[in-house]
Image 1 (cartoon, helix red, strand yellow):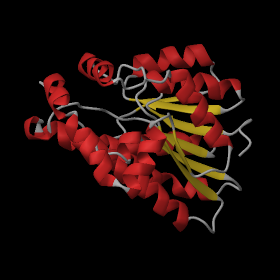
Image 2 (tube, helix red, strand yellow):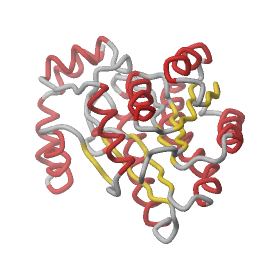
Image 3 (cartoon, rainbow, N blue to C red):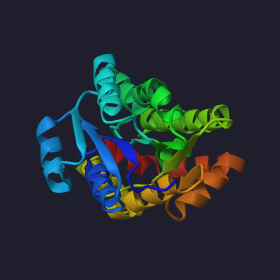
Length: 260
């Protein structure tokens, strides 16, 4: 997909990856529809990027918010692509997780982007070339203790993206899924950062991840995993899950220590 002059919706636009991504896309000549729930942050981002870009402060997890976003995209001329980036993370042992937060995580990470895709399909199908890009996580392919619900939410998006890509194979709309590993953003609390340090988990910069998202958006690939050895672990977990199970179970005492 040639990005110049394309109209692209980015959810979670003001986040650690989102704001960097929007700057990178704008430099490539993309016109943006920026959305998140915080109107003040959106205004700051728009001021940085320029008035050619559109802002819509809306809660993507609600029907009303998604309607507002879809209407804003239509008013801007109809989008050529959507990047579903908005998401939340909660690190805790499942037995101790707040049920309300469990539901919120699934709502924002999974249900909201799926329903938004459905609502935006008429606009996307009207374009000669269009793209849906769902941002997931390596944890969507590797079940990790302390992140059970987050893993579930991203695994669902991976399967959704795969199935939708096949369902739309005879249309002008292509679907892609990208799975970053740990990234240095505010999404990771101090507890998560401490856990990563204790486990030796590598973290990527938002700039690197945003660049990979841009490349995937512009290309034709449908699936990309980021980071080594994480990409290797994805493969091993798919063919020999007992090996990964044993390795992660062995780290459980450390994980439980930081999850308290």
